[in-house]
Image (cartoon, rainbow, N blue to C red; front, top):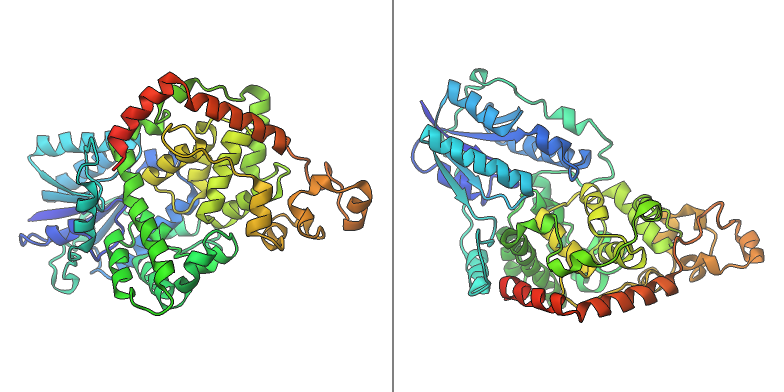
Length: 482
């Protein structure tokens, strides 16, 4: 019996899943497969929180399918496919194009060769509006609009013919193994059902204050969409989210927030397209001329890096953001940008030293957005505005009462605002009053912020004016700018 195999990757949903929709069209029974690959589990970008979210998403899918219709395996993908082909006839394979890391692209090329050797047709479908192999942005916006406005492709699950002879398949994964591997209570849980609950709650109530709340790390928890994780792992498609904006466009008093939200939906595919068009930015600066820019290395560089990674830099807003991110997997966009800016500008550390740390702690890690944004905030593209965030000003502006800092840096709980954002300015008497000894209870800053800002600003502007940076910038613009 010939079977159509739907290979799930970062599209962990049943609705608006092109691979699943098209797999059901020729009458063959359909088997869904997810493969937990040892290479992925060992990768420096992967963490337990990611695997838990994936497993939760698969449980959600499994509950809505006939028993046996979802096969979750552990092993090298090629080996799993070869084993499957020994017990069932794989007629065709359906999947989305994964805009992933270097090793996933290499794996997909191997799978393509394997399919060719087995005379198996592999149908791949675009990731949102991202165009594979694109070399310039001509007509890119028109394609984005066409994709986002097109009809969602929803397979008829109730009447679909599934392959359910699970006793024929070996190496089944117990999904609870991943879910029980950590305390899940503080993280968003995975699944298409929860993705829709989050989406509906945003458009019902939470999103009205979106435009006024997205930069504050506390209010963002409630009023930002919180959809990034569900989009990153494919519990929802971007098209589904975009079309919900249309349905709510005329709600009174929502327009400013919906305009702001829509602009960020446009950014989503835009940054992933950058990574698709130049995926070796995983390993090098987008603007190659920045490879030569001097960075702090050695023992001093490692000490600075470890302080940043653990949230012990002595700069409260930076430390609060990092600690909250480690604990919850979430942080709003403005504060993410500040963390990268502080690492690369104030600490003068190469962006590659911190990029995988944030990948592991971001529950919504999406390779295309992650690498494109990281390099932009690090100031190594040569085409973007140079932004050096002042973490004290960010604290005073976005956390004026110090509530966020005091929650995540309890060492400073008794220090009043605005002093809580610059505790190094406390006198000895004030330290006694507030029950804290700097350098003992809470570290002194790893760098002098005024000095580090001045040096970073001088270096970045000097570098941007270089002839080799300008030449590379023209190439970057020709590939990535619409």
